[in-house]
Length: 414
Image (cartoon, rainbow, N blue to C red):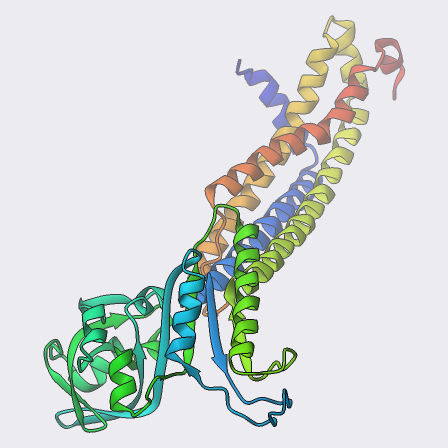
């Protein structure tokens, strides 16, 4: 039940020493403010890292080759390891139960691409249909390469939005012909890539077509696989790492490469990297919580000290109350209410100021690894409950001490 007289007493007590009340409230508000800002920026770091992973599939295994650095089984070092279609097919078949999407690639860097009077040098990649999902590419218009394109060696191309803007300007490119090294390819689609303009400055053509028109035979440059994710993240990471290690070992056997030659066959597992980075983010968040909670505790200790001083100053008043029949619980309630009020009011001010600062400054931050720093509703609600608990904790000892005051002793107090 709302007791207006009780609130009048609280405001009167706090107004007797405005500077003391202000400094106490400032320490609590600062603690909440620092906690909110730290948590907001930890969320911004998490968002930034996630946006980097969104450029490609997170559960991706990428395979590429280089030059051997060690002699093995009578073969000299310095051999370039060239992967073939057969290598991809064998691995694809062996691990098909664990593979979600797959593609092999044959890329040409700096290919001359032209449309009418517009010409530029762009990357052209021969790919399979699954590559759209591995790259998280969104089709803006038209379609992506399909199995019929591969089977029939069609001269079709899917171009990035930036390439389309460079060559076609405002013209619709669908069903128009572009020239790649003087050979005509029909544009069948335009894609958008979360990696931005760098990824959109390229064209995809069917893998079989790229091998044929660029005289590559059955050579491939890369293999890409995404694994099927399980509900248990750690199990998915273990599966991905085991599969990556197995692929590396098998390719080394196929191409007679020393098992400890790290340059000839390279396999990169993004899921393992994601786990390490997310673990680091969790550590950063824990440190931020620790610093923020520590700052709040400092403020709460200040509130507790002030409430002890207030109880000391009001000893005679409390004694009179008890002499007139006030129950210990009413004394405890009075002190706790005052402590919770100071803590809640100051803390909510720090919370609102922190959230406001994040809303104001957040959109101005332009960094690859910090994006949209913010504190979600659940965390904000948690801090509110934290404030209530902290306020009650700060006032409990002074309240308990006040309830134990004996009227006869209190009335003697000067």
